Length: 556
Image 1 (cartoon, one colour):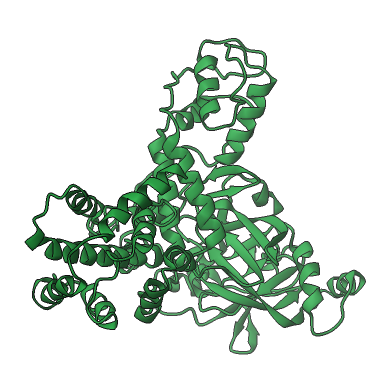
Image 2 (cartoon, rainbow, N blue to C red):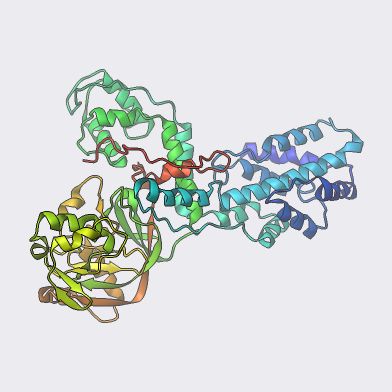
């Protein structure tokens, strides 16, 4: 508070000048007409000053100027510590305060200062709203993965434009600088959590180096490495900060180990092996970089989602259902393999199907079914798959299909897996119209939901507790259903569609860092989208992206 007061008094001095507003305005007009560098901000700056009759905006209002200068350095708005001409602004203020500027040049300096402040305000607004990632380059790199790695990486992005100039002008006139900047913050709750995490991790001391050994440390062990491990876990808050550090693997260290393993999606063993040691030895800068990248991603989204919605966070392998800003339920999901990533987009659940059939997509027929059918002639019968030519069911051999396995021509047959316990979609699917034939569904292979990295589907998302989700959504069904009705429908083994009178929005996201229950979670960049974003920063971008061969230490 004291610091803010000093800044205010410091700036107030510059508004008490003898130079007339008309003199400053004359220099402003000259700069706007002849000296203003042409860039994307130039038209906005000209419009702003035109609205103010080309008179100074900031230098005659200490409160307004103070608010802007504080905002430029505030990590809530400027989490990347961008320069935004802050050094030049500070230098001009210093010269003016110490009377280092001659009287005949003061008007020109005040005009330059005012113009710098306006330009910095526009740049700050642009950073909060749009960011500094070249999202078109990101999309280009994602599309290129099809040619380089045969990966269809789809991310529907809503790239934003600059806010309306009229709103910017209004914020300047009223002096509501911070309220206006706050109104621009995207995904506000998540954004503020990430900024707070960033502040915490930037303040953290350097992590101690932990030596590697083949010995797995467990409860009751004594080892000199444990001293470094406890110090390391104290820094990130996993191990209590007020505890005396010794070389014994005690109950508190086991608890801290389990917490850390949960946060990084490691095997929750409560023991410390080489893999966990590797993670512990990663520098804090890596965490900081991840937090910043996830803040960058918020720019693609609105200030907040609907009052009721479903969020599927792919790297977290979890579905969360929110209503009125409260978490209604959370459940695990199996997502697309690294070579068949789940598309990122938004839609709305419009209906559910109990006892669904599964029409196998053409790409999966070519990629999987033809090969499996060729090796096992009974595969279709064993898995209750029926083949159709038009509307007529036909018998088919693998030899007929083999020419299509690597062909661009569409397979002229329809493969439908009938309802049943061995149906790949399980007993219920949740339908939200989209061009990718992707949806949420039950699964006949429940064991996949117990895996650490749940990356086993071909794009759809298999839900851990499908009937819990079904019963929540039954509230919005056009007809009345209860559990007894659903059980009877399942017993018939016939597909039954349940339509909703209220559509539930669903957002498929990709956030590798988040905070939940007071803990910071850092998840693996399974599809390498974070890496692509980091290499697409304006001014520091790489034109192409090369997918690394190895993405995980272990996926078990």
